[in-house]
Image 1 (cartoon, rainbow, N blue to C red):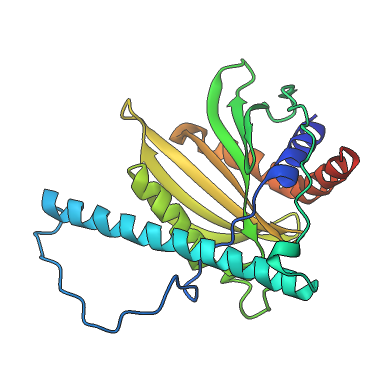
Image 2 (spheres, rainbow, N blue to C red):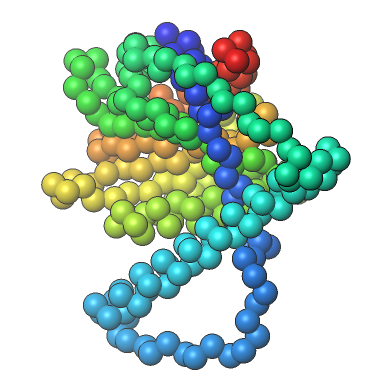
Length: 263
């Protein structure tokens, strides 16, 4: 069953995954440089030199975000240690979690079968009724929620994290994979607000691919459900993804209980 297979798999994700806080506009890796930067040489837009310059800027920004996330994670650990009356050196060592066998049973209800599990992501193969692959999907922990979204800001945030930050994460991924964002919006699934980013990319064979990213908050964490399929299978995977999102809170809690029982 879909519930049992993914619930057990999420135990691995929750028990062994490392939560990575999102980098927001207010997080900085260091003091701002007030000196006027040397203006980069301009090239004709969309020329080869222009794209090289653009990609170089994106790589630099990605490195800055990575440093900002590492700094923020260190700050959170220090704050948590201080709240517990501990120093970083006095913190107890993390208890090594026992390995949990990854289920490989086919998810018959929605034709999702687990393909791979890592300490932060569960990947699935999606088949049609004939057993032919129509796409792929993944469930991952994006990072911790940073607070409750007020009524005024709930349309612009998920778990206190601005939707602009989530959208930027997808844009950066699409740049790396020669894709592009088509649309983004929020909708309600199972009584919970879900932020959706629609994107497209081109496969090696030239076929246009539909890329869907769903973000929602469950028990203090922001989860992402992402799918990749041909455009003609877009609606099929979207419907199945919404079923997964609808039951995600129950799966997460079942996975947490399984993780505790296996300690």
